[in-house]
Each structure stands twice: as C-alpha cells, then as structure tokens.
Image (cartoon, rainbow, N blue to C red; front, side):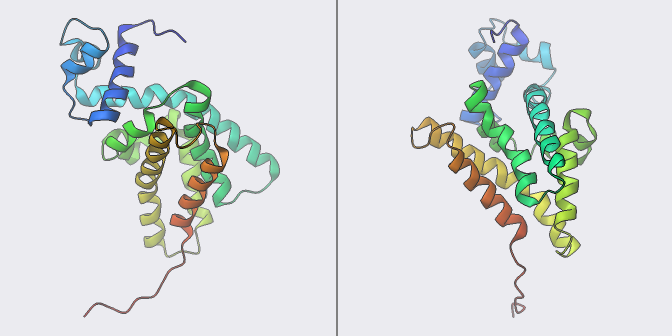
Length: 209
C-alpha cells in the first residue's frame, strides 16, 4: 500500500531508524528520512519522542490483532490449547509481517524499545487493540499453573524480552540471506525456544554460602 501521509512516512522512518540506530536517534534524522523539510515535524505530529514510539507500536497493532484473533478462534474450534498453541498465536503474526506484508524492521525496533512503557506498561493490556495478547497471557498463566506463582509471573514478564530478541535475530538472519523470510521451520524453532523458557523444570539449588 502506498504511503500517503507525512505522519505515516514519519512512522515508517522511525521504525527503521530506531531499529538500526536505537531509540536515541535524532528526531531531525527521522524527519529527513521521511522527506520532511521541517525538523520539528515529529513534534508537530506526535508531540515527543515517546509519542512517536507509541505511534509506531500502534501502527502495527491492528494487523497483529486481527491475525492473532483469527488464530485464537481457530484454536478454540479444536476444543483445546496448550502452551505451544498459545505461543504460535502470539508469535506467528509477527513473523508473518515480513512474509505477507514486507515489514522487515519491526522486530528490531521492538528489541530496541523493549523497556519502553509502550510495550511494558501492564495498563496497555487493557487496550482494545491488545485483546488477543491479554487473552493469550491469561491462558498461558493458566497453562503454567503447576509452577509456583512467583516463578510463573517472572517467566511471563520475561517473555516479551526474549520474544523480541529472538524475532530480531530472525529478522537479521533474513536480511543477511541466512534464513528465508517464510521459513516455517525457523518459526517453529522460535516457538519451541519460547516454550522452553516458560515450561523449563524447576531445579532445586543449594543456597550459595
């Protein structure tokens, strides 16, 4: 789809430059990349750097939300789900961004901003744009009920950080020609690794003296 507005051009430029150079990339560089002659274009459209980062996240949420809800509906039709199924509903739409939509910087963008409130604030899950993520996290919590609550919560909180890192590595491998963008075996390995993070057995350790 053609980019038709200055606002969207800035969002796409920010996604790529933050992915490549980090969240502190000068706003004037983002404006220039978006072919905006006015260096204050970012402030005009988004108010601040934080507002721009939030806008990039929101720009991708609609596509991800629709696809995740589709996958959750398909899983519901089978009558049962497990940790792998739920992780597939969470992860596959993000991997499909490259294959289906030609979006090749979003995972690295997320890796760069993984501590930003746009992706870490628990209040975000109350958003209608994140219904699918809220459902997935709630169901994962139930699937991991055999784990001690404190450990279960710690693993679920760590999930986005690990997810963003693995997806960013995949994006870099695709860019380098080491992995095909639609390599479903590679996608499955990412899901397997995430499942391992969540379901690893608890090992009793002697206290450090």
